[in-house]
Length: 279
Image 1 (tube, helix red, strand yellow):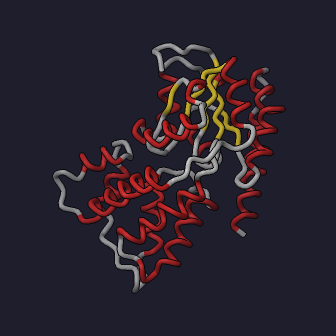
Image 2: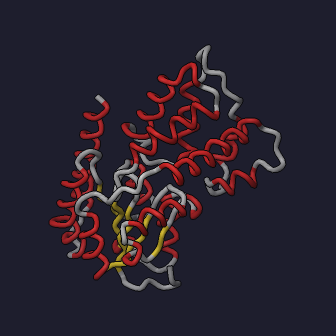
Image 3: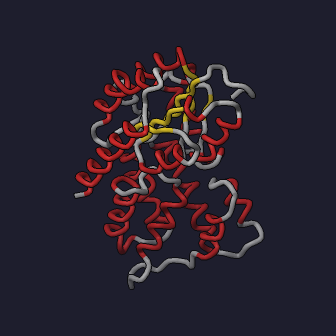
């Protein structure tokens, strides 16, 4: 992104599960199976997949950084006789550090440490990336995404704000011919979603002039931490969510009428919806 905003408004959009129907497929076909493979959990594969999918699709942790959710799932699997896992202390030390939560940062962190967990985690993450790069079909964006982005780009800069790796984001958004409408692509290399949004503020956007669109509770948290409001895309109801955004909520934002109470109401409905999916 240029040092100064091109336009005063910024629309930040998450990618997996929000703009593209890729979240479930990636977790079912790549993240979960690679966890079982790399950590030798074949004997309890069903339990691993249940924990992984519930954490990443139906809980408040939906959409979080892959390393954070990995630690959550590994912790949940401990204490079972058939779950033999390496000690996680060094992994948690890295997660609690101020380093970016990316493969390269983990590679740097583990250089001077003899910690099997770090080798396993990096192997898992790199294996996931390789498997997605070679085996993930390129899916179109959800209905309404293309129209919304093209219309929004007339009045606002657009930023992809995602926990996915940049290479995958460039491929997916490029294949959908949406890159030309995007001002900047964030990703795990640029830090957390909150840090990506903070970066936008540092470049001159005002909090009231930014709107985050996401499909996870963490997206709202990342936005609100920076004084930014967020609009939810409901898992399973994505097309309708995007239509409502295009018809009602984006125009309200443009008029300065996307209020705290409006945001609260939308996310309360989102939380009820997520609970129903988990049930």
